[in-house]
Structure formats: C-alpha cells, structure tokens
Image (cartoon, rainbow, N blue to C red; front, side, top):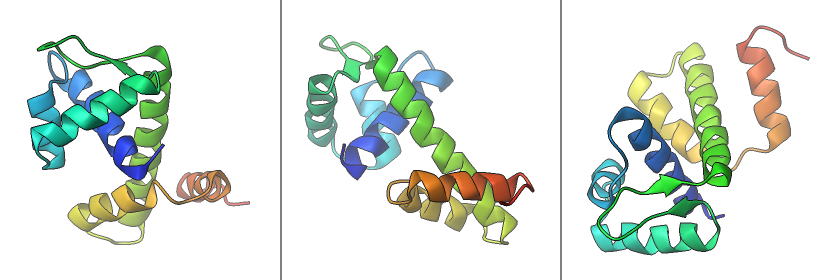
Length: 121
C-alpha cells in the first residue's frame, strides 16, 4: 500500500471515530486534497478490500481496513509521543510522525515503543 493510501485510511478511521461517519468531503478537508483525489483513493482502497462505500454514503472500513488503520494510527501516535519526549513541538511532531510512520521498520517502531515506555532493550 502506498504512503498516500495509508494517509487516506488513517483519515477515514479518525473521521469515522469522531462523527457520524467518514464522507468524501470530510476526507478531502482533513487531508487538504480535492474530492476527485479522494474518490480515486477510495476506489483503490475498495480494490484492496479495505473499505466499502455506496454512492453518497459514508466510507466504511472493512474488518481488514480497520485493522490496518489502527496499526497506522498507533504508529503515528507512538512517533508523536517519542518526538514530544525529545522536545519537538506538538505541531512539528505531528507533521514529522506523519512522514516517519510510513518508512520506519517494525523493528525500529518496536524499539521506539520500548524506549518511550521506559523499557529500552
């Protein structure tokens, strides 16, 4: 899955948790993209079996999509916490975590988790 699609699925998950559902216009606003870009991404996420959506209805994560979205969000929150612990401002930590969450290995993420929890290897 591309970094862009990971951003979309994370946004859908967060929006679905915070309101009555994730709609195309909400995702576009959150990610600061145009609605046709969201429609294209939703089509790709459907092809991957991660979301379902009927015309003019909310985007719904499948069980598989929810699992993927939770993992991505957990990585993001962990990286934000780690960067904040280093003294990075909240805004910059959020921006950097968004980039880092896509490229760090599972091993690195696990070690950051242990470090952040005060249990380094």
